[in-house]
Image (cartoon, rainbow over all chains, first blue to last red; front, side, top):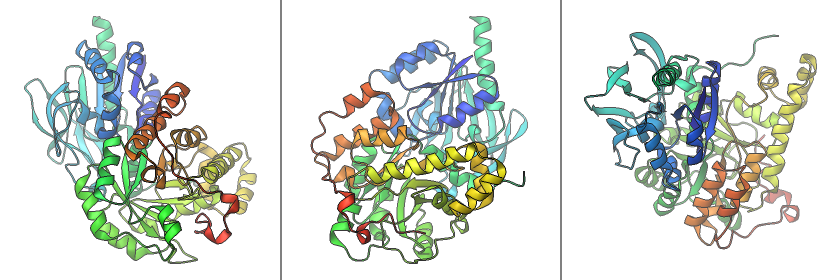
Length: 191
Length: 298
């Protein structure tokens, strides 16, 4: 199973390690043409403003949008969640708009406000790492909340689009990445 | 083998932010306008300064933590992390910057040292620190004090990449050598490096630093950025190289692209064109020892 990781900048190596531990083959994606060779996509943590500079070139963001709209499973964490959201606040900025949600950037504050806490993921406790993290605001009807922490939604899913405000790639818990791999398997079975 | 080095929760959060900056470019800025240019060009963070290193070099005098008003104005203008520098050993400047909630503190040889023996105990702070290093021993000493990111010192404000290359080669080479050593040899190496044994053992086992390893000091072109990254740096700091060049916005964009596509010559060719003049460089070999900033720090 080839899982692409958008490798423009950010903690894509940590995602590659998390996927490798689960038996998947990670592929670092730096160009739109590589999207045809992957079964799923991770948009990692990093700086969303930096990612946008690259996505605005050479039809990159349109290519991702097309792939995800045709069913490619995608997981975004932190900056990745910001890019997937339809509406971005603090400040407003462009995004891929593939998840019917509002995301507020740097919603917890600056780095001194970053934290690790135990949240809930699909009914089970999970250690969650929040770094200059965003928050989900209003969520569309088709969006399910799969994870919460400090009484807020922190992981959501709308069909093949999954997004977390925290960094599952910075811990050893593989459940979030497993969810992406399960979605890929499901799509293959049906496709 | 005995206990190896481990991270606590606070340290994981600090290193976590450093992880997010990988593959990116951190740019020195001295005012709000430059900070905006940097963010627009795709910088992953800005370093708020009163003077860039090449001006510190030219003007002389004691270089201190930047004017708070400048840092504050920049914090209000950009959404990317804001870093600022403190003098080596000046833990009160660090307390002030932590109270200001900067996202990262650089305990930097570019400023005039405040203490010629001791560095700041960085583990006492909630804000993560980055420190310069010329070799593995220096890098591990800084990590043992709590640095969550290492950068090569290079020679700041020189526009000459030769020292950054020397330092990244030294750090990466010494790490590679450790990975093939027997445990008793690693113990002797720890003595030679003047570095804590638990950290030396950690590196011997993993082959890399336990924190991100970036490069700084003399990077002036997209090719310079790609060079240090091909040699093993995970991101770059560009100081005088951008705002002392003919076309800062264009050069900033080009270096950002080069850091991402550092091992793709076709892209590097594209981003090396149409940039105007780079900053003028200095010949390090002709510099007097007391003019070299890299020698500061112990």
